[in-house]
Amino acid sequence: MKQLILLFFYCTFTSLYSTFAQKGENHWQAGIAFGAEHKFTFPTPKIAYTRIHPLAKIQPYYGASGHLNLIQHPFFSGAVYGGFRYRAIGIEGGLSYLRYVEASDVVNPESRGPFAETWWNPKFCVYIKNTVVKFGPAFLQSEQVPTRQEKVPLFNAGRFNGRFYNLEVLFRINN
Image (cartoon, rainbow, N blue to C red):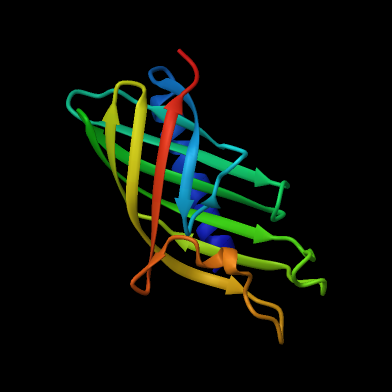
């Protein structure tokens, strides 16, 4: 099943690329994110690449993003996404993967991890000049928790009233 999903994404992106290869804009973005998808992106930023295709009224786009944090909690996350933009608003959906590597800390010297999660992230987007604000729920698709271990508290980031959400503020870094 996983191979079928990967094949679907590969065929979708390659066909989109060949269809729109002549026109399009490449946007590099960096910013902060909080929630189930990337947990929190501080002090290192979330980096995103987006390929936008300006059509008559709407702008379809697709891209990938990632975050690596080695400062306090060693984890990394990555996502692929696609969506549509109409003027200053947009709708987006994506899949993300987060991996917390095996580590220990001062409070709990025992080794913890590795943990992993996969999320489905639909989002509503608002564009203001070279900034985009994205917000939406997150739906857990799969998780890996080692036997006889509790999840790291970091994995509850973005949880409000029993549901998980994402919030991102990204700034365009190329012209």
